[in-house]
Length: 342
Image (tube, rainbow, N blue to C red; front, side, top):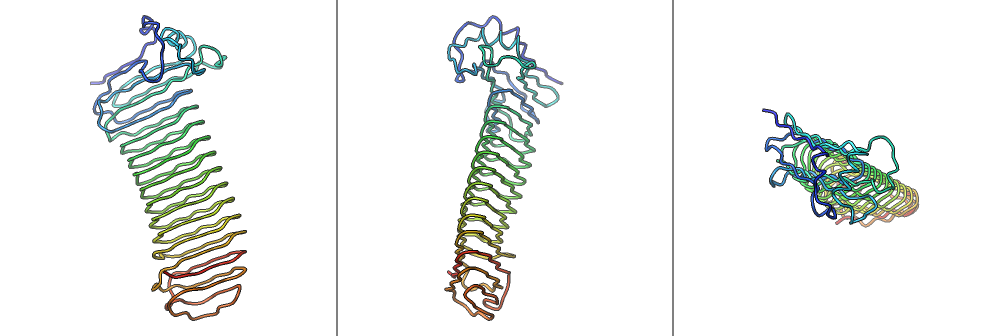
């Protein structure tokens, strides 16, 4: 049997005129244990969805955008009635929560509100979340998650399934998650830790920090450095304005930078290693006993490698087979190149 909970703003008109802040929910509503989908759209607050096993519920937090802690519940109720479409509705295993302004009004005045939602569900829940001015947080969920914010950070922890998120002005932190991860920011850094699967990470203005990742990984930045460790699988990464440092890599690497140095430590080479820099030094550490095909070009090449080599070694080019040959190691450097084995 369908259960519908609709927040009617008029019902809150009798609330006491006490100061309202983000520590106390403006309203709390229970949710069914079998909830499957969460839809939240808010004009100016944060959103969190958690499947950590707490009592299923949705909490709504409201305050003035001017950060005025003296904003009372009565004032909030009047502003909601006049200037917002505000509802929380549950039907057919779905939560639909909305806090949207009615057209355009002077939201620099007293009626401008920040409306945030905290949703507690079971683990098997999908979501579609959108906010124009706050952060988004997801934890302990399995399903399809689509989320977007115009002005906040993204935090994802212990989420499995399809994960697709975007922010125009904040950082991204994803950890302990898997399957299909696609995250993008226009103005912040990205940190990814202990994740696996198909992973795409993109930032236009920050650094990348990658740790303990496994799978097919594409991670790029237009304006920062790339730092990674314990990478397994295939990594495609690049930056237009920073250095690249990758440690303890087992698999394949395609890494390039237009204006920085590159340092890569390979524990095991998979199908290939491709390194390219336009204005920095390249240091590559290779496994001692693995057979490899070397195709290296640089301004000045130095080699300190164990094993048998057949081919040609010149100051600016090395081409041949190490330990009988194997996966291709291709390096293109406009500055110095250093090859070592460990």
